[in-house]
Image (cartoon, rainbow, N blue to C red; front, side, top):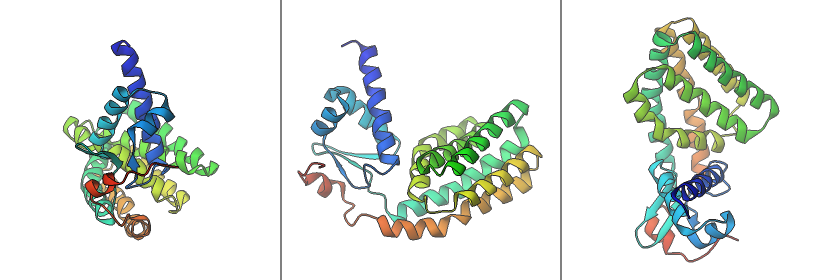
Length: 233
């Protein structure tokens, strides 16, 4: 197998597993058995392990030396921490976007907003989560702050996962808040944009934490979880 072929298989395995984790087909705390996954994805162990390492770098997977891997056992505390970071970094990104976005950048943000509206009308929860994550990621891009982009990039997958797990939140309300945020950025009003961005993040916090308490795993120790030999059925 050439390095290019292995890279292609690695990318395929990464995208497939990432999608299944975000859509909660692979649930928080679930053990990932390499042999089973290699059979399901029709790849060898080497590209699969490379894909798992990439997912671990994004916080979606935990690798336990000599024991294997599992889907990160997210807890309400993890969700709280994610919101704490979002309240600071996303507000900063939005404020900078209002200061720096040009016509081309606003065009990209318009397309992200329209995609989110279409997804909302379709009722497709997975696509709603993906579209909302793209909207937020584009605002970070519009900030034109390389350090901020570097800090936020590892959070993108976790944010999409969070949007998917909190699908019970009113998608129409989220879309309305995104529209409000877009208009403030387009008006080049940093103060109003920062206010709307903070309000938008805070508005989903309490419900997300309540939902997190409902699906939180009881065992969060990766070593204990990976000690189990059971496979997915």
